[in-house]
Length: 297
Length: 334
Image (cartoon, rainbow over all chains, first blue to last red; front, side, top):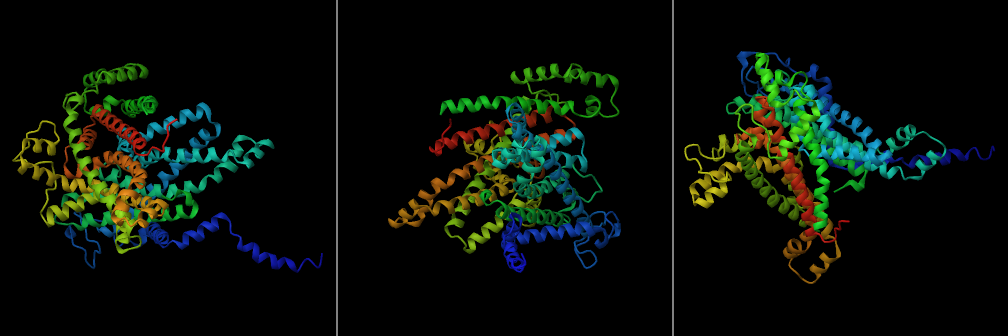
């Protein structure tokens, strides 16, 4: 035994080199410059959203009518709107709203979509038929139209816009998980789990769900991008956030009145939306290549 | 082939029924009394009662649904609460306007997108490739309503070269027969009007085309890159055929199949994007029709508008699936 002991440290460094699938994915993600730029943009907006209230030069609804529609300057980097509110401050606060809606709507769709997808994929038969038809029906509507329908029922507000966006994304995740479950449930380790008498619910949550997560994370990142645009679109149409909330889409809608004289009121909120969405898209693309090369176009 | 089409149509029936049910639920799912919500707080009890009767809200829900379905099958899409005109009569000019705009947009998207994708793949890693792909990335991340506003500002206001709202010049209206103004003015030989109609199409068309254009360009590029590496393309080149023909004749034929699906999907998205574009550009299409109905709580119009758009969306997808089999004989449908 004492002779064997010194050998252990020699083996250990080698074992370190064998990376798990997540480490492998991280390495491949880091290699893609575009993905890292995307992650950088996302991180930037997350930090802005987190420390927003402390870095914003002015309160979001602080009105100085004497400062109405001022051009970008040293005092107001991105200018002021028609109430004399500082646009930079409002955009900073808007990052909170957009990211909040993006994250939570997608989390909502992932949870509901996963449950439906797992149940459909694992139990099959008529349960699968009903759930899959339900997905088909929802996907038969152009998504923004379905969101508008939901908001027209629930009434316009930011929270209802979030719910609407979560609902319209459910079938995308549901279908993804369902197809993943269908392929995983034929694997041998699931058969052996069944053979040792493991209960369905435990198999679902401790084996099938964790193993189908990679594509969900990729799809989820890309879905946040879409959710942010959809929330802004609803806000723009007056069906999402209401005044005086500094939601980016709503800010664009308000800017329409003055955009001939004060184009900056319209340019900057749009740039903010575009950059955030671009960040999530780039990051999502990079993650897809890293986690699941087969999903590449 | 006919067998396949027949089966696809049969499969559509449950989806279509489901769609009608979702749309039917729009009014019924309004919290509280829908009639009260539609008419507002000041409405009299009689008015509310009359509206309840008109919408058939007094019956049990399944009776309401079958009434609604029966009506739909007879072509009854309900009546606008605002104008008291049947939706079926009202909606045609709006649908035609959306159709014209969408066709124009998809035309721009396909022509520019497919060619940009081809050239990017042909000259992979060139400056053109990089620029096109960066533009495509920005394009898919762009909120369409913001792009619309920017186009209005740049081309309509700063440069003043293109009209920013509407479909035609108000002082010189098109005498319309089909509501497709490009077609109408062409038929009537009114080329002065044709040019204004086309000018009105440019900005909303561009705004609507941007996202599909970007997606089509990316898809074409990756699909072309794959095909360009195949043996038959190398053979064609080895035979000394001009690169242009190798790319556009041999490679494109096989590369276009996945692009077609994407184009089909984009047509559906266009219908959704049309709501935003039409609102910004004052385009009297079906998106604007639905949007205005929302502000007036005109639920029958909201319901039927959404149903019609979704129906068109489903039909486009069906047509694309069928086209698929015509273009690619390798796809079998059993």
